[in-house]
Length: 153
Image 1 (tube, rainbow, N blue to C red):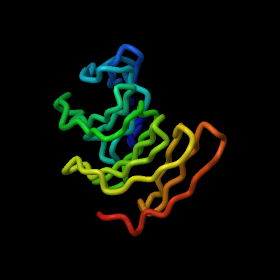
Image 2: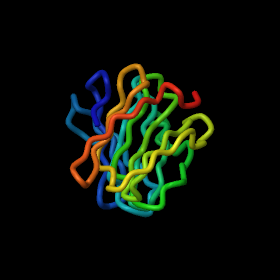
Image 3: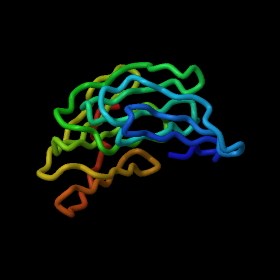
């Protein structure tokens, strides 16, 4: 994932770490550790201050990128997390898992705000700019469009 200003990127890896990269200098800034499984999904907040990672340890972790520290671990999936997105305001995230669910999270509290179940593993997610709609692709080749406007904020 590349930051909004294009100066940094963050990557997840099979070695269970995330790496923050300085794209202008072409070098690693820092390594973030904490997941017990490989990191399959990463998203950066609009302001570039935080990131969220999804792992095959069935968790998500919210990170403070400036301090290089974990803010909190989000638990609820029963399968590896392979897709994640953060809302434009940075207050919510949505995750997709091999447990065939999508979960909408409150990033300030770590609570699950809503859950959506399907049949195939969730492979990709995108949120609309206004945070009211989401599209997800699953392992069965289907695309799901969900309206989030009625979900708690």
